[in-house]
Image (cartoon, rainbow, N blue to C red; front, side, top):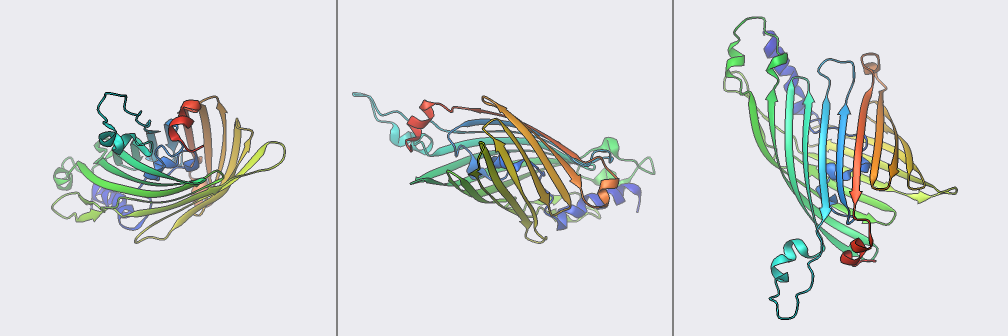
Length: 323
């Protein structure tokens, strides 16, 4: 097998037996919308989030992810004015005060594969006493292509390279459920529900199917003395044909301005997090340290998150009508 064929096989192995097909995030608890569409607009705020992650720095072709997301709660439609037609029945789909909308675009590079995707999300929130139950669904699509600039061929012309579909366009669906209360949250979601087929070529290359991935995410917060809040968090993810992985750890908040955290990832890493808040601006940083042989081959993984949240005013509470 020539060098290109070997590289291609190595790239496709994760598509058949691992839950690593989706981008990985260490600060998932700061933007749960990335993993669960039901989170869109759950707190009534408008949130903009930028996450940049460099995994296993120092290794050639190491995974790199950049994600930009936005989600918001739709403002409740005002009552009809006297003498004016009542259009609320038409607007209820989006203007009932229960609807959240979101969008998410990302680029994920792993080895020689470059994947760019986008999703749009509709969420519906039901308020029950001091709890909120949310349902969400996303329509997604992504382009997966081979970065030919990094391919090294032993011969000037490779027949496999000539027949390879250099860019694939794949639609899919994500869905989730999210339960939220004043001191806790619990969410279940699934990505790549259609298990779309990737067809890389006609000769010598079989079809590969994306694996459906499930996430279980939860957290609980309680306040200690000296204005310190502790939030244990966990994330479990698994594919239909692969073993599950989990993250478990805690975040520590000092007031509402500073936080730090530590978590353990079953794949073999310790994650350390720090961050601060200034008004609507949030900045977070995470460092992943490998606990296996990979620690001698790389300089760790680094993740930077910038988050802006708007709408935390009296206007927000009036149209939510839940306080």
